[in-house]
Image (cartoon, rainbow, N blue to C red; front, side, top):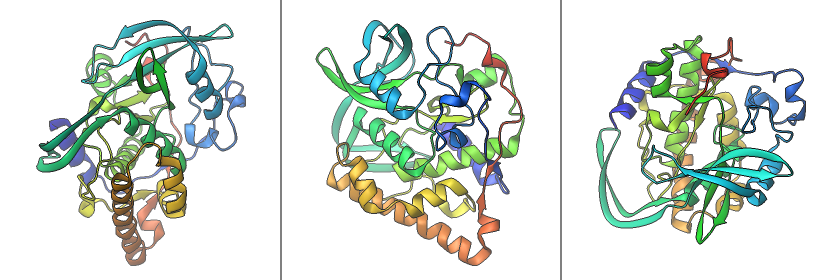
Length: 318
């Protein structure tokens, strides 16, 4: 939680952010669809040898995750949900994936979130929330949550997600590579976007370990098992957030309740869905007022394309 508090302090000090409009790498990105390429900033899913997978669309990778043979598995030493790192194989193609099957419910839980105590009558840590976060991320057009689908492995039903190769955690960036972001405005703009997403999904476990950074200095939001729930409380108050990434704003405003319900109903209860709609309404009202008072130019920002490649692009990462 200390990391989350530090992150929040950085964001409250963040003022004018700009940001993201992209082009994918030339030849390797040809397989990306037109709708995905601008949001992905050229990120390519890689096989176990570091080569671009011959398929890159959401639908193709979802099919691979669902049906590919599991040829190896190892325990991931980090995290509190005992995830597995898998090697999948299909038609001679091998790629890594992560599998998590946690699904725990507790009654009457009080926990510290962003420096404050919060009570949950029904507290849940579930792989279903990871799938819901992915579906919501795609519905909003963010492309910040890695691809994840439901799959049963042996007797365990859980969530299996594509492994993001050539990425590091925030701790690795600081301690192992000692690399500063080349564009602080872009970096802070991405953090602000993910902070608002944390509010939308009621992320109770927002910390630096749940952020991955790819070789294009793009931030990815992972480990969403402690999101959602029945609360309409915004864990990270909007009072000091004065701007919103344009794509997220348009996604929040243009996605109908029916679309959200259709995408997330298999993974959220009616109470959880109602709470999500309540949080969404609060976020929309906040930025609608800011835009009415200050104008879109002062409130909405775009995130610029990456200016350089990160040093771990060719490095071996755990």
